[in-house]
Each structure stands twice: as structure tokens, then as C-alpha cells.
Length: 267
Image (cartoon, rainbow, N blue to C red):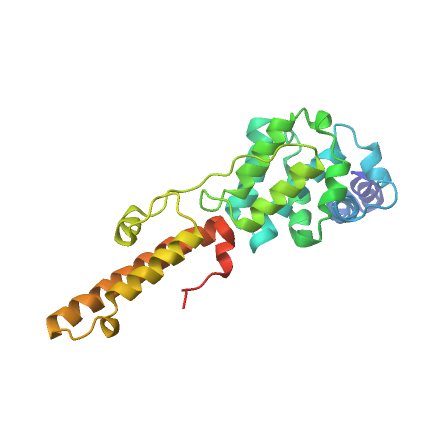
């Protein structure tokens, strides 16, 4: 939008060359404010409101503007599902758009504004509404590319996908009629598994069962009369067992395996 700059320059012409420059600068600032408000209103309407048509600015914009807003919004919905969004998440979204599919070519500032506004909306994004209006052909994206994009954002923090992010990705895929991706899983700590005597494919139920058995086996209070050296060795073994348990539990929690986020040491 350049209306403000043109009007400011014309009004400033009466004051001479310096007036033209001042008028142009004032008009530029006005245009920026107006443009930001238009983007903000369009993003809010597109990502949070299922009722009513899209604003005129969205309808009149060529090149899949509405689809671009929705695609960025879905990425933000995934990223914010388990807390604050880091630069890694926003960088993954912007990088995907820029490097893989070129939808931001010539529109870098526009994409940045949409990304910022979507980030402010956060958990208010109406995922089913956004998916219902998403037209991938406007962005020249395939359904496989959409799934790859969601997975990229979901695991950009530490290479894994948390339980909350996995659920949002699955929600999006279900609404879009797509199969959910195979989520990456980091191998369990090999040393901790060796201490506990469990395999890499162990789940929370097995972890807790093995932990109970080991605590009963090595706890000095349940082993009868022990020498001072035997009691010291039992205590050291318990320290290693507890550390191994906490290590594996933390990994299961990160992955959301068996809803381990609510788990604690068994009594």
C-alpha cells in the first residue's frame, strides 16, 4: 500500500523539497500501520473464526494468500501445543516456505507479519476451521508435503515429537483426511537400560514392573542382616537403579509413550 506516501508527498510539496521528503516519510509510516492492521485483522479472521466470509483484503489477494495464512497457522498450532515457541519452530516454518516450496518468494515481509500475528494467536487457532479452508493447490503443495511440514515443526526442538504435538498433528491429518506420519523415536539410553535390564522397546508398564523388582531385591532393609560393606553396596546399587529409572522415564515423558508425562516412581 502506497496511498499514504503519495498523499504525504503531494501535501508536502507545498513546503518545498524538504516538505516532500517529510511528507513521504510520514505517509510511509501511515502505510506501514495500515498494512499491519489489515494483516492482523485478516490473520485473526482466517485462523480463529469459522463464521462469515474472508475479509476483502484476503479475497482480492492473488497467489493463495488465504492458504498461506492457514498453512502458517497450522504450523504455529503444532508448535505452541506444548509451551512457548522457540526460534527453532518459527525458523522451521519460514525455512520450509522459503527453501522447499518458494511460497514466500518476493513476500518475505508479508510472511514474517503473518507468522508474528499467528504466533500471538497461539492456542486460539481453530484447527478444524483452518484445515477445512486450506487449499494446498494454491500453494502448489501435495498432501505428503503438508505432512512433512507438520512433522518438521513438531520435532524441530529436540528431534522428537512430544505427546501434545503428536495429538495436534494427528488432529490436523484426520481433519484433512490424511494418514498421520510415523513419529521419530530416540533410542532409550543404553547404559540406563543395561542397569535396569530392559530393552529399547520397553514401555512404561515394563519400566515400573522392573523397577519395583530391583528395589525389592537391593533395598538393604529387606535383605536381612548385612555387613556394613554389603549395606554400602546395596545403597550404591539403589542409587544407580534410581538414576537409570529417572533417565528412561524422562525419555518416555518426552515422547509421550504410554502417557508417561503423569508417571512417577511406583510405590
